[in-house]
Length: 189
Length: 439
Image 1: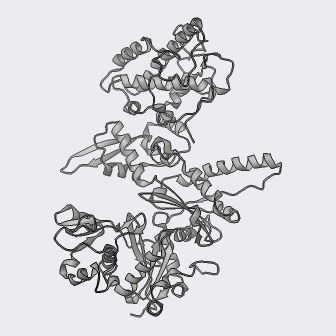
Image 2: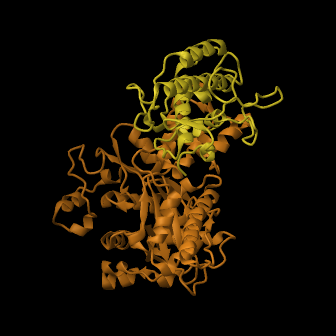
């Protein structure tokens, strides 16, 4: 049983830039993503039912992260898998920024900075996965993709924090931090 | 005491541990490391105290001439100064003794040490007179007949034992599975998965004979699981991540899960899945180690070797399927129907269930493909993995079972026959426990 693939592979309605799919997201951040209904206070964000209309690919990324990050090989089956790869590598980067002595507040600040700082897009010389990701075809597409990925990064950072600081607001979960040293596909962003 | 009433002695000498006991018993009387500590010499053949190097062959084989000659001349009391098993490990910690493991990769490498190891096993541990007992020894699959002869020379000439039978471990492991309620017919056809500390073997056996060309071994076994647990403990910065702690955690907490993603979520929802292990570091110092994901991730390396090793990537179920597919077509059905587990690293909870499910899926996929190609409905193929209570010492228990049957003695070669014909007599043994047996 190799690494897990995205369940969104069959979803071909989403717009694709380069070969990166822009799936709808459940987020309050501004950007080009189609917005899914937000959760009510009664919903369990961490164990959201995949059948729910609010379930997005970021929920899946966080679900598969701990298993997939143990693997070094991954066969890409479609645009959804590329979103998954980017998400997993970004989570790894976030975990690297959270130090064991950081409170939830401090970690939030650190991750916010990380999510908003300038990042490489597919096609840029510093992007580490250019062998697997196709560049956007023009400036317009590149801008849209940058805004979409920025949305993904901010939303992932928020949801990751709610998991890492689930038990205590002052001490990060060592179970999550233990994955810091693992490198999915032997890569990092 | 005459030999007609004494139980047979069953000795299963493995690379890691030796299992000694009497036929008819439920469990071996002694289980200890196959290690010997001798004075001076470290690592086997080196000489530390000015004595000649230890000969590789039993002294009596070279007679008066050759390097063994002066060894036997020097056999004084210093030659009795050695320890085996746990005592050897303890002695090797102090000064003056060097440790040696006479069995490597299942085969006996250092005959002089092995002879002394047996000597101590028989006289100091089991405390029997070898001339009063028949002996059942085990050998790995594909053991060369020469080493079987050397074994017989030691057993008959040094120890003067009454009779000897040497059985293949995999065949005995099959016999041990007869205690499971899932086994209806006591056949000696099946696939044995033998996983100890160092290596895991998959051995197909057809009617008591090992199909040598189809055996596969996997470089993942108990020790690797321990290392993996250790690396997970270290990633988390636990206060104690010694090998000993990792091993205890492995033995106490690990199990096989059906799906790792679901299992991770289960740990989020049920915090009592996380456990604590208290390590006594000695001198009254105790530290608590948290135990978490390694509980199911560690045995997972059998099913997803990729998460542990970068050069061996084939999952165990695929290896088993491959072994059976490379065996003669007329025995494949029997090999799928009777997949028997043996050895300490197969004891994880639900190991057999997961293996059975994964092999079934592989077989099903192939059947569906051939159905589509041929357009004929297949009658299906039964895949069954046998888990039983005697798995840990499977080969020993199989030996105990067969060694207590009334016909066991007639399958052995006796001292008399040995004297008449010579060592070559042990190249062949009639198949014990075959059709018509009463085991």
